[in-house]
Every structure is written in C-alpha cells, then in structure tokens.
Length: 346
Ligand SMILES: Nc1ncnc2c1ncn2[C@@H]1O[C@H](COP(=O)(O)OP(=O)(O)OP(=O)(O)O)[C@@H](O)[C@H]1O
Ligand SMILES: [Mg+2]
Image 1 (spheres, rainbow, N blue to C red):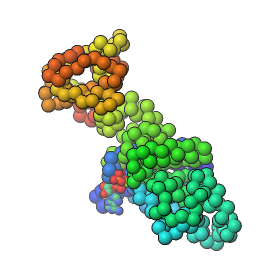
Image 2 (cartoon, protein in one colour):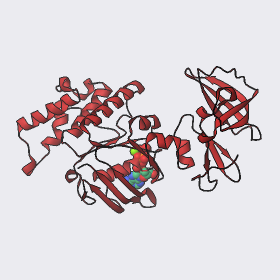
Image 3 (spheres, rainbow, N blue to C red):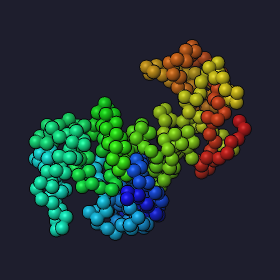
Image 4 (tube, helix red, strand yellow):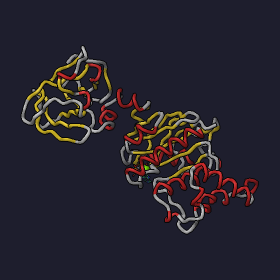
C-alpha cells in the first residue's frame, strides 16, 4: 500500500539543481527521516512526492502505481508543511473537517460521515476535548496535533511531514516528537519526515537519508549513519560536537570526541595513542568538553574530547596528556573525494 519509490528524481529551477538525482525506496510502515542542511532540497523533494511540484526528471511510484504526473489528490498522501498553517478563524473541528468538505462528486461525504471521521481522528490524537476551540486557544503542541489530524483524516497511505516541529520550543518539541512516534507506530503509516535537526532525526527515524546539495550522501539506520559515516560530510554533519577529522597528505582520518579519552580509562587492546595538548576545559553538566591539539599538528586545528562525568581524571589547561582512541572507532577518508576508505596504519 504505502511503499514509495523514487527513481532518478531531479528538480532544476533554471541553474539551481534543487534536487539532483534521488533513488530511494521507502517501505510500508517505515518512518524515514530526510536530514540535511538548509537549502539542500528537502522541501522540494517532499513537494514532488506530494505532487505539488513536477520533477524535471525521474519517476515516482506510490503503492506500486506510477504517479509522477498525478495531481496531489490522487496520490493517497497527506502533507504537513514547515509552517503548518491552521485556519485561525475556524474551530479545531472545522480545521480537521476542511479536507473532507472539499471533496466533490462521488467522494463527497455527508454530515454524519464527516462528524464520525473528525471525532475519530481527534480522539486518536487526544484533541477531542478541544474541537470547539480556535487554534490560538491551543498550545503549540496541541496545534501541531490538529495539523496532523487534518492530514490524517483523509486516511492517507503516506504521511509527509516537513519540519512540523520547528516552531515549538525545545520541551514541547521533545514531547510532540514522542507522540508522533507512538502514533506512527500504532497506525503503521508510511511516514517521511524532514528535518535539519540531527537529534530529531536520530530519535525518530527507522532509517535516515542524509542529503546535501540535492543529492543523497548516505542512507542507513541512525546507528549506521553515526558509527559508519560513508564520507566526511556525513561524519561532520552528525554528532555534537562533530567528528574530529585529522588531515594528512595521504589520507584523512576521524574519530568522535566521545571516543577520545585519557589513556588510563580505556582498556581496549587495539588502540591508538595521541599526545594531546589541552588548551581549554568546559564543564557542561553531564560532560566535560576538552579543546586541544595533537602533538605534531597545527595549534589552531582543534581536536575535541568529550568526557562523561564518571571519567574523573584530572585535566588542566596548558598541560599535555596521553589520550587514546580504540582502533575500531577511527574512520579513514580519501583526501580528495572525502569518501570512506579502508583502514590505514597511523
Ligand atoms: N521555486 C523555486 N525557484 C527557484 N529556486 C528554488 C525554488 N524552490 C526552491 N529553490 C531553491 O532550491 C534549493 C532547495 O530548496 P528547498 O526549499 O528544497 O531546501 P530545504 O532543504 O527544504 O531547506 P530548508 O531546510 O531551509 O527548508 C534552494 O537553493 C532554494 O533556493
Ligand atoms: Mg524546507
């Protein structure tokens, strides 16, 4: 039903290659996250899946049917936009009923069918008590749920969400995220969710697609993307602070700040030791963040270490220490292309 297949999808606006050749299959019931920096083509890709934009090239299939030239209403999808605009002058009920009332011809619903569908969807999203309110009388999270209810009421095969949580504050965002995930699991609805927030992507996605400049950089589970980045773009884009990348003429290599620890706390057998000059130590509550540079490297090329609070080793600025990285946590990259390469000896 809800399988989405993209073959060679591209969208060019004049010289701008907003989306530049995407091949992707989204499985039935999957929660797929599209992650990438601003302007990388996420919204354009979603608009093509929704039918709001016609691709310059390529083919889109939904539920096994080719829909590339179909208008939005024939695709069985629903989309919640980056700025999900609810109608401010309409009640919550009327907002949710809106897409049902706009149906014409044989799809037209009578009044009691509309009431049933709206109340059913509202109760799934636990907003049944607010049906008479206007959007401005709701919290951000509740408005969010109304926007999702309005999308869900048409029983789409596929739900497209374009940064729907972006105008919520951090706490509401976390709870809205949990709700969304529970809801998606319960109804097993194929969902494509766009964000530029890596934490959101890691927490929500069954798989993550990392995009940059209109192209896919990597597709994988959150763990795969984080642990086995396929190039330096992905390595740098995920993780906070991001992966340390050390540049040599023959190859580049990288390791994450949390893999870079004082020698005495690591008991792995295969490790690499580094002489580490500490410049500055920051206390961040749960972690200590250490800024320094590796011996033999430029002082201005910072290498960071992130030490959880249970690592109690004393670290002072302007001192030198031996820090260690387990060998399996070091990733190697081609210096020209940035692509992952096999292991080298350091
Ligand atoms: N209608 C248009 N005409 C010309 N250029 C466009 C049009 N729509 C988008 N673009 C360009 O295409 C590129 C991708 O835009 P898009 O909105 O898909 O990015 P995005 O990944 O959704 O970014 P954000 O995270 O900021 O929402 C951008 O460079 C944008 O300026
Ligand atoms: Mg966008």
